[in-house]
Length: 332
Ligand SMILES: Nc1nc2c(ncn2[C@@H]2O[C@H](COP(=O)(O)OP(=O)(O)OP(=O)(O)O)[C@@H](O)[C@H]2O)c(=O)[nH]1
View 1 (cartoon, rainbow, N blue to C red):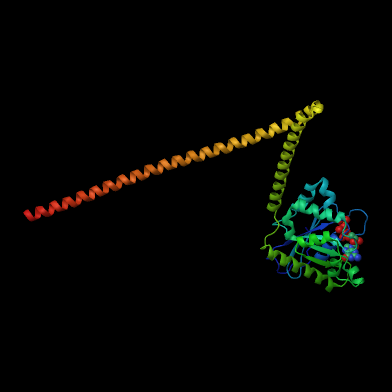
View 2: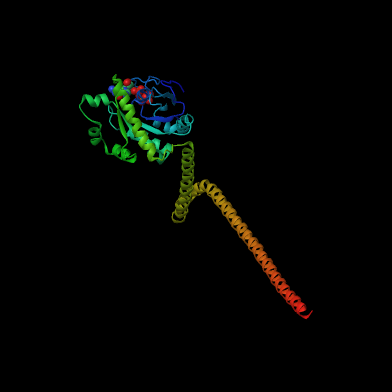
C-alpha cells in the first residue's frame, strides 16, 4: 500500500477499507484516484480491460480519515472461471474487514445485461449480506451537468432492474464527476460519499464485512451445492426406475445409466447410514450418561437421608442423657 497525502496527528484513527467493483471502463480507477486525492490507479480510455488484478492504495485525508482503496478487475469475466482469484484477491488485501463496496456504474452507458451480471456475480461471490455494505457510485457527473440533468432524474427513468438493485441497498448512491478540475467540487463529492459510508456503518452497528462472513457464505454455498446434487441424483434414479418398469424397450440403455448412477447413490446412502449410526451412538451415550448421573444422585440422596436419621437419633439420645443427668441431680 502506498500514497499517503496527509499524516499530521492522525495515528489513532483506524483505516477504512473501500472496495471498488463494477464493469470495465465504468470509472472505478478514476473514482479511486478521486477518493485518494491523487492519481495512484491507472485510469484511461481503452477498449480492453485496464485493471487486471486487485490493487490496494491508501492515504490519510485532511480530516484524519485513513482509507484503503481496493481497485478490482471486472467481477463477471473472472466470476465464471476464477471466482477464487477475484474474491481472494480482495479478501487477502483486507485487514479487519471491508467498510464499503462501491458498485461503480457510468452515466455514459446504459444499464445492460452485462452490468446486471456483474452485480449478480458479486451477490453470488460474497453473499446477500454484501447488500448492507453496497453503495452505488455513478460516474460521469460532468455529462449529467452538461445536459442539465440530476441524478434523481436519471434514476427516475432508469431500468427497473437497476431500481431493484438500488432498493436492495436502500437507495444508497452518489454521483461522481471524475473529470472536474475544481478542487472544492472534488472534495465535496468525496465528503458526500463518506457521509453515506458513515450512515451505512452506523446502520450496520459499526460491524464490517469480514473474512469470517465470507468464509461462512462459501461454506453455505458448498453445502447447498452438495445437497442439490444429492437431490438431483436421487430424483434421476427414481425417474429411471419408473421408466425401466414402464418402458422395457429402453432397458439396455437405462441399465447402463443406472450402472453409472447407482455407485454414487450407494455411496451417498452409505454416508447417510454412517451419519445415522453416529447419531444413534451419540444418543445412546447421552442416555447412558443420564442414567449414571441419576443413579449417583439417588445414592447421594440416600446417603444424606441416612445422615439426617443418625443426626436425629443422636439428638434424641443427647436429650435423654440430659434428662437422666437432671434426674440424678434431683436425687443426689
Ligand atoms: N466524462 C467522464 N469520464 C470519466 C469519468 N470517470 C471515468 N471516466 C473515464 O472513463 C474511462 C475509464 O475509466 P477507468 O477509471 O479506467 O475505468 P475502470 O472501471 O477502472 O476500467 P478498468 O480498469 O478497465 O476496469 C477513462 O477514460 C476515464 O477518464 C467521469 O466522471 N466523467
